[in-house]
Amino acid sequence: MSKNKPNDLKRFIEYVSNQNISENTKKNYISMVESFLKYVNEEITVENVKKWLDKIRTTYKHTAWRQYFVPLRSFLQRFYPVIFAEVVEELKVPYKRADYEMISFLDFWKLYEEAEKMAEKGNEKYVLLVGLAGIIGLKSGEIVNLKGTDVKNGKIFVKEENTSYSILPPLDKWLNKYEGRDVYLISTAEGNPVKPSYLALMLRGLQKKAAISLTKPLSVEILRNVAVGRQVIAQPSLPYVMDLFRYNSTKTIEDIARYIAEKGDLRTILSIEVVDDLEPVLEFFTKLAIPVRKIENAYIVSRTAYIKKGEKFSRLNTIFVVRNLDEWQKFLTKLGYEIKRKEGENYFILLVGKLRVAFYEQSKL
Image 1: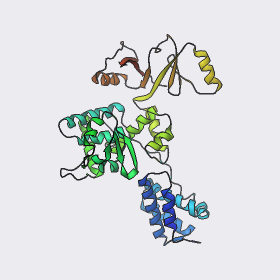
Image 2: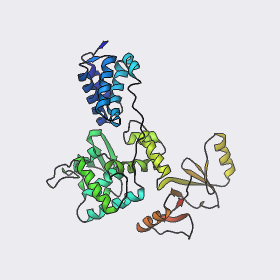
Image 3: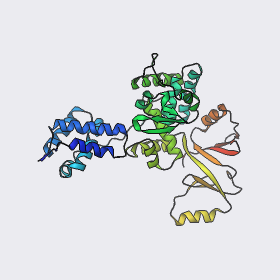
Image 4: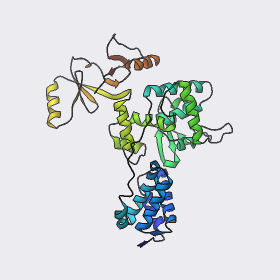
């Protein structure tokens, strides 16, 4: 038996406060451990830990166990390692692959377009919601608490997380006008903050208006996955993306990356490096055992396509590897870009300033 010391909760709070996790996660950890200590009457024993685990298992579905088990694992492992060693197997949560619903980038821009039409008629809250969730990547709780005073110098400051995010186009057109104003970005008619559940209702109405088909109702989380997905496309480092969105592990990022690989309409973006002779380049990567993939006549290493001078695609600067090429062509034409594409070709080229960009469709990388 091990008697709980009076300062156990205090020690755990100090420990959690120094961990690199979000403020909301810290609050959850502290709350869960506090409820555990109260339940066992501040007496930490193997028997009492098992009683607590049985209570959680019989009260909640297994999908909710993690939020109780993970903080307790952290507490016991840190302060009661002997007891932790005896109950570690029981603290494991049955693995269930998360069913991450996502929408394609093209569907996201359909939603944004509908929201922007509403904004141009005076109702800006929809475009702010879609942009804050799908472009910036904010959560429901963060969005409902945002004020114009949190917008400054091209950034959004989220007090709860003690962090900031750059305001990206095209959202800046609508968001920057609120800078410094002491008003909620999304509010009721009386100017009060809305509840997260209201955001869900807004998105369901917008989903219907844009005729987007999903197996689940459109939500802030689904839109946030779009923001995460764009970072996965742009940044090969999953730990970087994890830190950017303050996840505790790369699991969510990995699921989103898997969706992009299996179903996403924008799969990867490649920069072009033109070389006079491919042989020494490929030999170098082969000697280092660096994986090389091939698309047409281009050899891909990481996010760079090496192409021999004078061959197909060698005059390009960037290649977007996509699915649904026809839909991408319609979308980009609508944005005002002139598309060059011959009938039957699985790619098209457009000029972006002085850059020559191709959108290329291939079933497998």
